[in-house]
Length: 189
Image (cartoon, rainbow, N blue to C red):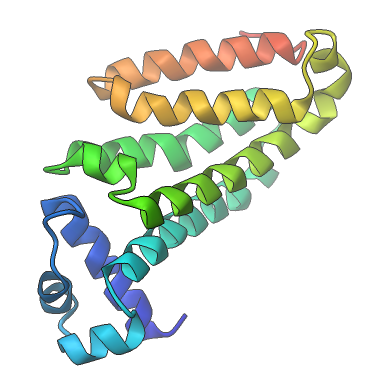
């Protein structure tokens, strides 16, 4: 990704948060990025391309932040805390500052929804890799690490819209973490 493309994506994210994807125009993004509309269209063919690129960018940044912190973790509990902090908590905070959070969570349109689904698969793969060492214990619940990972990602993504405050989100994440630790045969305290 070129520096110009990165600048445009970061500007687009700010504008999407401010106005919602539906109300954001290409002119809004060009203005926020301090580039001409011609430069914007040359880098990204249209708003759908920018929406997809923005979702990919956020996914990559957040999951890379998780991967960077995982080597310092000594337990599944710590790994889950890192995953939650770098993904769901950050996303929740961003959505709380948005004028149209529902539009952002929904992906705005089919292109955005498809990219969100791809993002969720990447999240599931990462969470599943954290659970692999506990395959035997998780298997005793009738699940596989992949099954439990899909469940975790589906649940936490729902938390972004269901939680009404950061305190409520924290409580929901604690409950989910306890359930996952129990399924993995780990201590919860």
